[in-house]
Length: 110
Length: 128
Image (cartoon, rainbow over all chains, first blue to last red; front, side, top):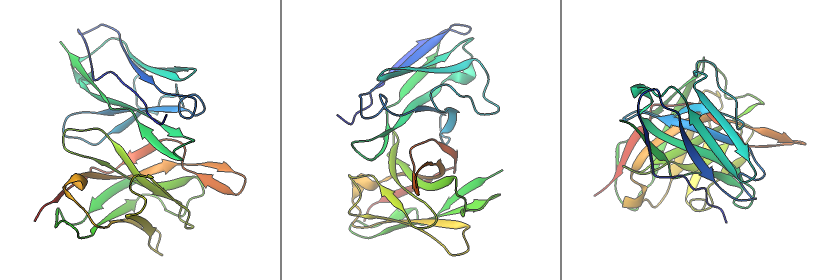
């Protein structure tokens, strides 16, 4: 099935570590790499993690990605108020022959 | 450093055609490493991939929009375009253009990788 699922919300206090999950299937996450995007309110999405666990230049090492089987995760350590944003996972789906995004996770820093 | 900028009408009438342009600066569209993509985000909702194009003509469209979408590139290789026909209120969204990293399979490029950078987005409202 061509669906990628994220929890709609996540939260943490400053300094904490939070993880956001992204669950798919063999046709998408199971056979392709996963990318993560950060979208702060009122702005365009920004690439945060590519190819499962690679950080673009300029992205702090507080952000890390991992993938196992048909699931992927984004971890944010040393949580900061500036991390409050929507986070999306994206991947290619071989059955759809197209790009799929998860529904997005709204991260709140309490 | 590549930058992307969307432009076009902010209001389109139902049943008409939505037409947007993405200007690429700081780099050439005629690159063997990249495709060029359109994505959209309805107000308050998540991201949706519309389609991607390689500058030599290969196109890849979201199956749910394929019958209505055309992505093209101009001959000067500094702009690419989106046309979406027969629009309805459901097509109201912020539309983004982005560079889409591709992967070669023999002599065919497939846009299977990540989007970076993105344009700032343009809100298009479908209403009479």
